Amino acid sequence: MTVDYGLTLALGERWKVVLEMPARLSAGPAHTNPGVLLTPETQDVAAALPLFGAKVVSAVAFKSGTLRMVFEDGTHLTCPADEAFEAWQITGPRRMAVRVPAGRRPQRLVRLRSE
Image (tube, rainbow, N blue to C red; front, side):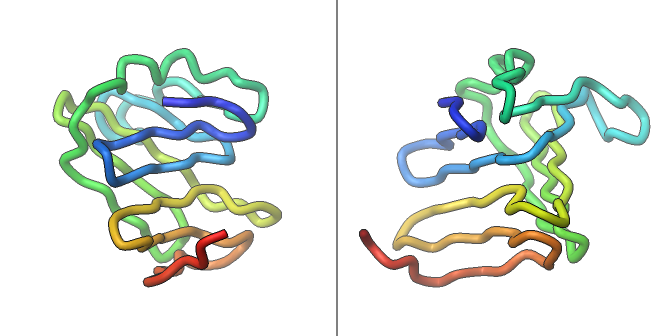
């Protein structure tokens, strides 16, 4: 787990999730438990520390651009799309990536350019 302009969750050795906009962390679905707001921009993400080492059981990128992750203990992490900025991105094996560009739907990128 790292924090700079975004909150990076390293999921094993091969997957990373970067949240660059505010996200909601809740014990169960956000509509039944609003939980706490994580704000990577101001490094206000201490509530995410219990996710260290947690297993992801589900990750869904909705057409609206919202990313919802569910962890084995029932914790939900929800990051909505943003009209002005890229809200989140996921990178994995073989340089595969999924991201949600500002104001658009999630995009799957099969190959990323190495720099």
